[in-house]
Length: 142
Image (cartoon, rainbow, N blue to C red; front, side, top):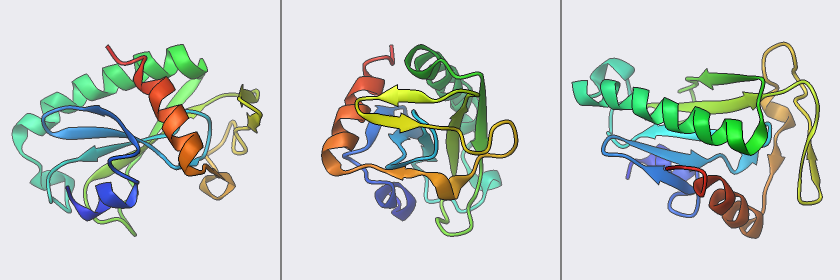
């Protein structure tokens, strides 16, 4: 796996695996259900991905949106390609909502709603919470 995938906690954060993509739980939850859609390739430019990765990305997006709609009932969803620190191709997937979501004892607010997501307001989960949330979201992938 590439260094970006490892930085986002793989394999502990793995939600779902496709041929060209991994869907990972984002350990710092900007909003409840924040994920990372990461290319398995070592590519550091979107245009360098193999052609098959682009068509498979559509399947990944359908899976993500169905699962997160069921899990968090988002109102909007943002896909952010922010490859400034982590160089390999990946997207931050941020479900957006106008009212707080509760998971366990943690309340998740969308601090940026209705504007851009505020990444700095993310809630960092511990290893146990990561495992539990990853399992809960992963169960919604079919």
